[in-house]
Amino acid sequence: MTTIWERMAKEWRISKPKIDKARLEEDIRGNLDNVMKTIEKSNSVPSVLDAINADDDDDDW
Image 1 (cartoon, rainbow, N blue to C red):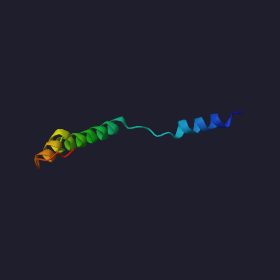
Image 2: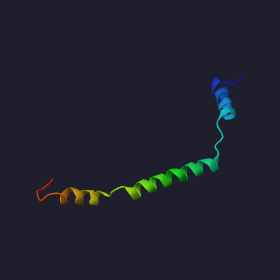
Image 3: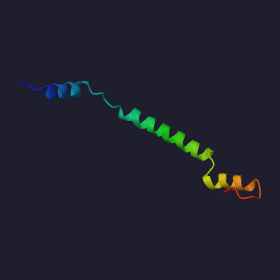
Image 4: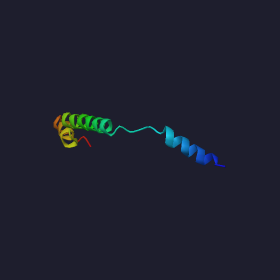
C-alpha cells in the first residue's frame, strides 16, 4: 500500500511541465537585450547629480 505522499509524488512526476530550453534561453536573451537598452538610455547617478547641481549656485543638499 502506497502512502498519499508517494502517490502525490508519482502524479507530480507525470504532470510536471517540460521546460523548453531553447525557448527559455531566447526569452532570457531578449530580456537581457531590453535591460541593456534601458541602461544605455538611462542617465547615470553622477550625470543626474551634475544636472541637479548645475541649475543654480546654492547647495541642494
